[in-house]
Image (cartoon, rainbow, N blue to C red; front, side, top):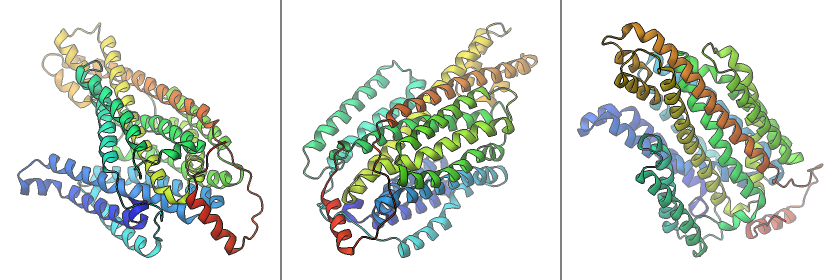
Length: 475
């Protein structure tokens, strides 16, 4: 839609929706009372609207950068873009932890309102407008519906698989439906005059490899954030603010490494930077596994988080640069939409699948450790269920009636079970990121950029016109 109607328009449109939805999240309790529904229902509905706005914004931000910056400066621009995202990753958890520790949770969302208004005014003044001059004004609504239903079926199955059973007819049926729909989606797109997803993009080797790496790294990276947060605030007992501060070294390293990697990718290409980054990321997560214990502190996590953050910073900017560098400017919106969708799917699957690994291992470890405890079988089963669902604060309550003396022992067993489950989850995440190293070797490096030579305006215009009308194919 950005390629057709204007990338700036779509970015600002999404920003307005996201900002308005943030305000609705902040007043969801009051709005729920007004409408006669629960505050939670109102909050979830407003969050859906936030996601709708974000879906308009994110692809446009990437395609706008691709349009504005020439190929030989795109890496640096995307490096700064990644660095700013890392800055948000620093400020968000710290500010969020501070708010929920000392103030009402509604302020988490209300803070977005003045930021969104300021961003809208700045975008209105600064951002250039651009479209694909060759795009028709038709929207492939069939492709939108088929791909949306297919992704929804797979993601829902991954999220609910642990609760409903991975072999249940519902979960197996959803997985089958999702796969069939996505296969049919590809068939559908080949029959459309102006498809939503330009399949010719996947003939570009760097774009195909970059999309695969984006999926894998998003899966592995977000798979560690979720269990780490639960581990720090659960067995270790950190407050939300302290847990947020613990992750600062990782984000700082991304901020430092991303612009440097972006600049280097303009000069030497992305392949070896990505191989180095993914190697450091995998080693950092392996290191994090070794540092996970019942006596873990924020100090013991600094070094593995620094290594992991450095690896992420060396990976993200060259990855985006490699994926987008050979994409013609005219269809950059479609390309950035695919990259963002792949990243979001990877994030959701990482949280769902690795979250399920954490829950399964936690329940299994807890069941093993309670085998010799003098507890009736129903009580043991209840404690194991609570542990598997991370409802840690309810376990002492479950032992209040006649088993108070066993609370310290059971909570000690829980901490050990949690350590083992977290280590397993981190290990799966590290192995996943390591797989991406081999995919990165497929990336094709461009010729090295030497000293920039002034190019006549006529030649630049001719080059831009050729770029708009051609799709390079990897040799």
